[in-house]
Length: 237
Image 1: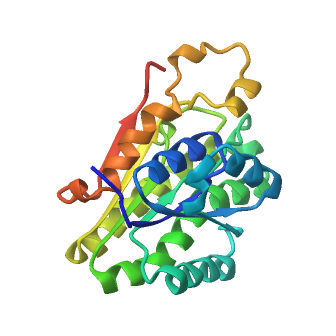
Image 2: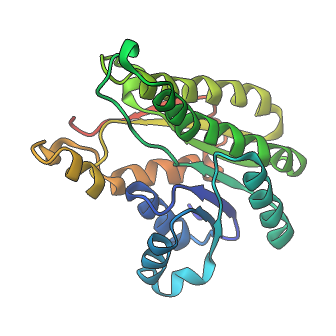
């Protein structure tokens, strides 16, 4: 399988999972447009890519703001004429409170970061994908969306929304050869997660390099028959 000459937008591409996904896409031949917010993180990541960074197009973008997302998509179409793939990796976690204790600001932050970003980016690319009658969208939900627990309500609801949004878009896009799927990871073995949970058994967490091939398949030509799926990627956690 190859992504040669495919144009991909990968949100959250400078994160622990995002860097692994972006590198795989570049190695497989894709031109990757990478929205980012932290200049230092972007420069550090680009410096690690060697010659691969020649096919990396960073664009300063806040994917929770519609006007910025629209500019990102318009610039991508202007430069390359199409958008083949959207990988929605932007997200984060906030927990530790019951619903009764959750501040409105935390609720809004989780909805914006985990769900609104997926909505805005997908909304912006779908007309182009429909016009070209081909596209792949891959979203990241969470095992928490299915295994409900206490004290992470805003996060859980936002990730459950990603599942429903994925299924709605799959239905709406199925006549245009556009596949929309989601993965459901457990805790991902990233540097950030290790810092937050230093006493956890990291060997049981799912590693970015294990998730990357799953996302690569969902972005490929071979994914054609599969759309509207939610795929568990749990590791041993």
